[in-house]
Image 1: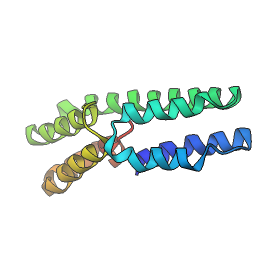
Image 2: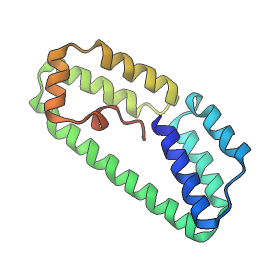
Image 3: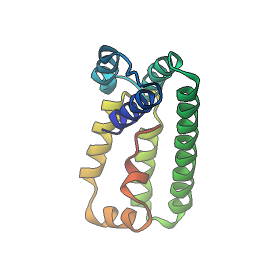
Image 4: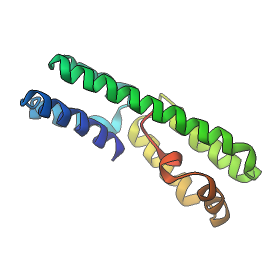
Length: 144
């Protein structure tokens, strides 16, 4: 879901800026195979697509990527500040979540399945403890 939002936002930005949409086939190809690719692979495909567009769109894409990177740094900072405050059991779950998110060898689909399993396997005490300190977006982001 998040990967599709990221891809669609870039394509929409390109369309608005140039009044030309990239080929529907190109967009369908990226979206159709996104679940089996890593975030890095998806980002490379998007970058290739954006490189074919006008300078304004390239700058908007670069600015968007910088915002996403900044948001990700802030999210990681929030997680690492909270970690020492959590019980050992909750720390273990949180570390598993973060390690899954940061594993560059997993495809987006694999990460989604693992994170969904972690989420559904947590007991209520762990869920409540995490919810006191972090948002769902902090916990289950797939951007990086």
